[in-house]
Length: 312
Image (cartoon, rainbow, N blue to C red; front, side, top):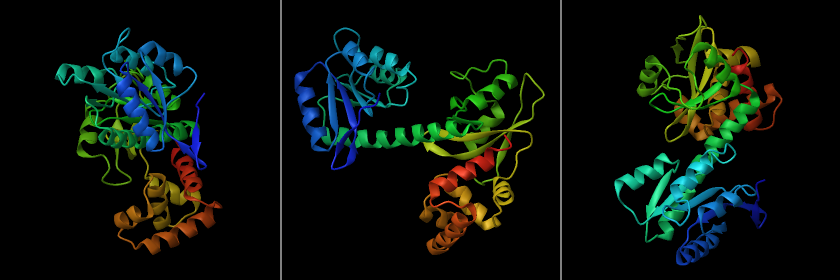
């Protein structure tokens, strides 16, 4: 269950603060509530784990050193729950030793701040991580619902997550495939390191080690600081623009605009990428909406994703 607080009709972010120091709890509660957020508090790890069984926070601020189970172990247990894996955990610690910082990040934390806490700095960090987590989780949920062969990897080629459809193909292609710990082949890692995004149609062959499948990966977009969304295609890679043009009966320019819409780009971004005026992009969008029979960019992007993924 996800409890949502509202203020003036809009949703409030829900922050869980886990710390055994009353002064810290008071400081953070006052600061974050003043910023329009709802704050829940837990004074030790077990209490936090009990709370998240009933309520899913948007972000967790975790003291590293607490009685009972410490913050590192609490974070590991939180991250082992799929329903909570997307929730960013920021460690708060008086320990600036590198080993403790690394330990926090290895436990699943996305960031750390040292005590004494500077509320304004912490609030800024929280907002950044909230935005990143929502983009990544929202993209995964939406794409998983579409039932596409999609996966996300970091620049080093480590698979961060994949849809069930992609997992099934990869399991056939690679005997050692494990959705929780799998690194893409060297050719793909080189491609990712080069940028993997210079052209909409750019793709790379993915050579299976356990079957004769012909697979390729194409770039869809960047959804996190080091999280790249990819489409897994069975057979030769196709030009996404040409696919949209053919399946949705668009002009080549309209297909190009729609492709960038599906990748989450704003009208201003698309205008810069395609060297068009924003007014021209808007004109193309009007034609796209009319041809697809939709009223907004979200619906148009969903149709584009269906068309692109239809062959996979």
